Amino acid sequence: MLKRTHYTDEVKTGEVVISGWVKKVRDLGRVKFIILRDCKGIVQITFKRGIVTDSLFEIIEGLGQEDVISVRGNVVKRENTPQGVEVIPSEVDIVDKAIRPLPMDISSKIESNLDVRLDWRVLDLRRPETAAIFKIQAKIVEAIMKFLSEKEFLQVFTPCLMGTASESGAEVFPVVYFDKNAFLRQDPQLHRQLLIAAGFDKIYDLGPNWRAEPSHTPRHLCEYRACAVEFAFMVNESDMMRVEEDLIIATLKTVKKECQKELCLLKKEVSIPKTPFPEFKFPKVYDVLEEFGKRIEYGEDYDRESEMILSKYVKEKYGNDFFFVNKFPYKVKPFYVMKVDEEPQWARSVDMIYKGLEQSSGGQREHRYEKIIQQIKEKQMNVNSLEWFTKFFKYGVPSHGGFCLGIERFVKQLLDLKNIREGVLFPRAPERLLP
Ligand code: ATP
Ligand code: MG
Image (cartoon, rainbow, N blue to C red; front, side):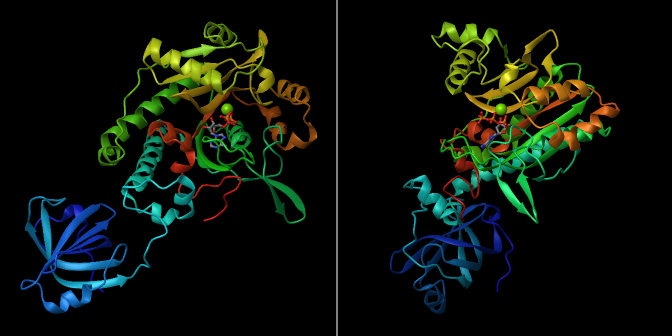
């Protein structure tokens, strides 16, 4: 087998060995063109009778779309080709053949419907536009980790198998765990708080979470990834907002700088928002919404439509795609949030919205033992079943807080994907567990 020496985008001059998939064959009788695609792009290979041996013509007889080949050849300049060059082959190795017709069109000319694309995901991922989403996603994660590492946040891994649910208990996937009931985590909330109790000053956990939500929305997955950031000695939730917006800016700048090729393929531009991001607080949120004819009962949670209304308002008034919502009603938030001491109806609980969709939830957590116990009772949860968590709060815990940013949600909004599933290699949704 021929050993690859160059990717298609490195083919400039001299002898090369390139490997990849046949994107297209054009047969003009005395000349045959093969467009070869690899992970970096495409290049033309030109077989001309008299220049290329007859035996090579025999070898490539019958080659077609998605066959895998390696080609040795010489590079010559040629206008009107994708790279301004073509390869004149001297040797062709057929690595594997594909069955045709393919079950979906991958020429990028016809957009198949998303379900077909996901059923045939491996073929769909061969489309450069689809692959570009994941190159950008990887860059986002790399940029997030670089930012956090430079700010001295320690990367930690906390358990995915839980003995109790961290929120109310709804929406968790049960797991058979020997002779016990266990759950898949909804997010790494409680263990990251425990690490703050352990004296870890700044941490983040980037990993999978699961939600047994039978909803079929374009923004929910049953398995998603999130970057959960937590830090100690927080004065108030503003500290967390400043960290999060700096992280967003650093990430967007990196994508803008390092993913030009992919952004171009997807016809997207990245704009860098101004900081600080606008912030709305409950109960004022009700008044703003009322101005737009949206009535929410005082003390109640807002809804999807409210997120969109506020987004439109922020975009028009401040020109920003991002904003924070703070001081959510305590009654709609989990037991571990910190209430505003003087106004306990409201929690130090913050969401970040990007182009009309929630990206993260966070805020300041309650670190005082008595208050945690009281809040568990208020939420009508079982104090004993959370003792494994609460007992550590008896022994001195700093004020703390953080946020949990959904990776796929961020990719969706950045690239204006219609459905979050487009931004997941192999999405898990209520009706989709394969491939
Ligand atoms: P929403 O109300 O939009 O469904 P949530 O408030 O239930 O979200 P959180 O529990 O706050 O979600 O989770 C933190 C973050 O994780 C969210 O802001 C979002 O970015 C992401 N996230 C949560 N649930 C999902 C899901 N089912 N699919 C994809 N991402 C999710
Ligand atoms: Mg939330």
